[in-house]
Image 1 (cartoon, rainbow, N blue to C red):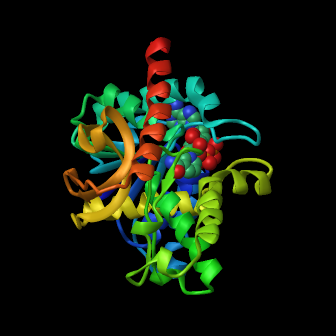
Image 2: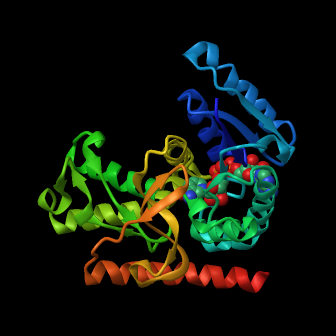
Length: 309
Ligand SMILES: NC(=O)c1ccc[n+]([C@@H]2O[C@H](COP(=O)([O-])OP(=O)(O)OC[C@H]3O[C@@H](n4cnc5c(N)ncnc54)[C@H](O)[C@@H]3O)[C@@H](O)[C@H]2O)c1
């Protein structure tokens, strides 16, 4: 069985570990600073094996060496957004954690492809890439997949159709400035503007943009983890299976979309080497303006981290 490391065994990390193990994707090793908790969760998950029928091994430890030899490492260590808290508020706290995570990956899994989940996502992906020193195509952020899944869910709910038929595309930074793309979102190949009036599309786009906050508000404490865990799991599957899926992921840009030296959500092909191609869509003027505004907000976050250094 192949091995996936997860740094941070909280809600998202544990959910991702469970989804990977129960789908038989890989053995999973979870590292968390909390003593006992990762080992306890891992044992609990392993005991599902005889019940539901899987034989992936899950191990958990507060020793980072547990991730040694992982082909893919998912970084979920950090603090979730609390109600009323902006993603950028998390910056200072999570930079330290992202740097520590990067050091562990460099030491114990130097050949891994890295998938970052910790918020603020695009900035933290950059921090992990900088700390590991890995080629940027080996370090990619999970956000677009989740934001697209949220948009797709709301489209399916509005049309009262199966979510299986909906493919949605959301680009940009993982935050209020994300850019849902109705023209590139379809229901079994039929573009969204053929199916819904502009006002409805706007309403669903706004709901997707606030998708994380809506759940934070309902939960009262903590933030979403089932769909985030699943989105990271899907990215791991694309890497281990070398499937080259086309997915929106936070990716290092070097001139694409007229943007450079920044991590931002764009469509890419994801395979065993990480990002194998950045897909440049022909965006219209409004879409491109929105993407650039989103990039500006991520660039501000990166500049803030540089000041912290
Ligand atoms: N990218 C996305 O779309 C997305 C979606 C959901 C959540 N998130 C983010 O993912 C992160 C995790 O969310 P969660 O709900 O699992 O939070 P959580 O609080 O449940 O879990 C975080 C875990 O990280 C651990 N941790 C803290 N510092 C650590 C360190 N230095 N090394 C190892 N582990 C450490 C904590 O002990 C805790 O178990 C947050 O930053 C959250 O905002 C991102």
